Length: 357
Image (cartoon, rainbow, N blue to C red; front, top):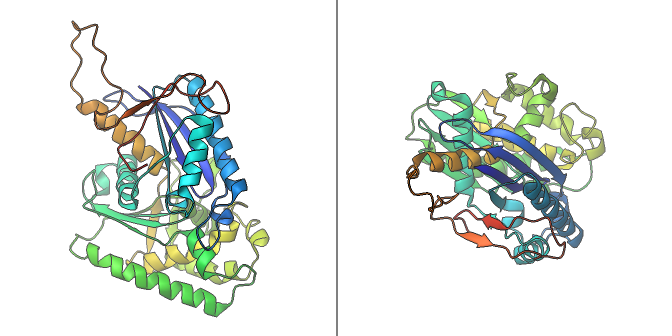
């Protein structure tokens, strides 16, 4: 089966296409990334600006056309907390569906934590043992832990780097020490309450950070460059990160974007991301964590691959029967030819995951 995963996050829309075969690893076919910059285009009331909605529609249109061109059998389109928690979420969903015929779906934060944990387990394998995972997004922080493929605990708290920047930090630089201190105290209090759910778990053997935020902070503090490849070991050290927090606070977004590892798109929220990462590591007793190159999109693919592997094998004699491309619990939405403002170039069938829409 050729699967496409369209993930619309706070900064970018990513389409990953891979071939899934039971018993094998996902084989990448192609990928597409387009900036949507929702974090900076969402006001304090949670309303996404119209220009940003247009960027989402354009990205979804291009992704649907790419999926059609590459013969994708199943497209899994979802948006994370930037749209899920937006005050005008129905407007965004309606405009994307009107333009492309694709209806975005949403996971709970706990489901995001579960699937990201599944990706990290797939990357590090069983030798990782009891594993504690952190994932900082634009709107939320996911925490998961366990010793098997599925986490024993999966949690989500509204401590995303974009959300905290919007609600807790001033829009000008430098950021005062008292503002950074207040943010850190707030983050620590929320994580401290959340950590109660982890107290009965065994001590983790492996600590993992899985997100673009962690990857950029690791590079900022000395980890190998992206061109070193996904197999280069990347570690984020808490003490090195703590030393960078006041340096980030002293710089404007433009100045931060010139630092190693900090992209221009995420520079404005890099301080909040660093505060969340450092506070979470401190509260949870993590000195260092490994940065995993796989995250939510790969978790979705691995979850679908497991579903394929557990499906009954087709009867070779029954040539008239077609085995469904997705689990029975996932409804298939058929799109009539020519639907949408942008004409041809859309999938004819868009199976959706059994999450909320």
